[in-house]
Length: 242
Image (cartoon, rainbow, N blue to C red; front, side, top):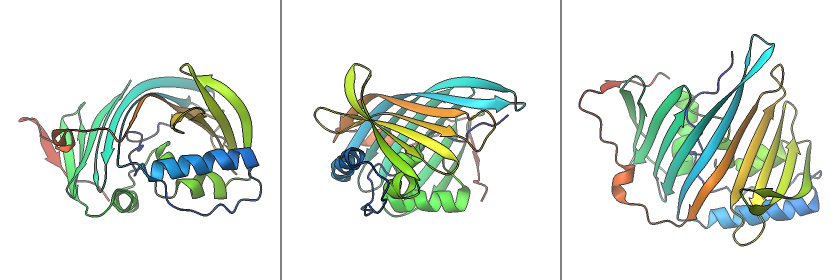
């Protein structure tokens, strides 16, 4: 059985990097939407979201199992975030505040901490390099999201306009060597993200991961205490494994 690890690191810095568009197979309409998303997200000072997660795993190379979950996440420049991830078999919280990064596993009541200074992008690049902290969906919010989604794609197409949670959304799709992705972006008003789906063609039966954004609050006023981890009295501190 294959399961994705960790909370959706829709946590890796929600502000997209300034990566030049250099992919000749991008549909012009898809290009326009992705540029609008880039400009919008690059200007955010804070973000508060809630989302529904769906994740498939393959059991015995013959059966697909589906698991659900929820995510609540807040971010604020220059380097603060929190994430609360509840799934069928995983319940975790993550915090970054003033250079202190914490992962708390509610199921086994243990937590690990690391000192990581820098911007959100720098912090999560280091966490990925040193501890392997990453997850499907994180590419949306990483500092090199455009490169990961577009420059490595064989083709990016504009599918059309469809409905997600009652909102009209641009539907864009990309094909990479071993995976496909689909992205829905709000059509009217701010180009907020509506849904993201990844299909892993490198695994038998091509399992999918999806995240649907139920609530999206740009430049939200987030209380300081939401970024501050307070360990339960009976929780055990452990170390990250590099």
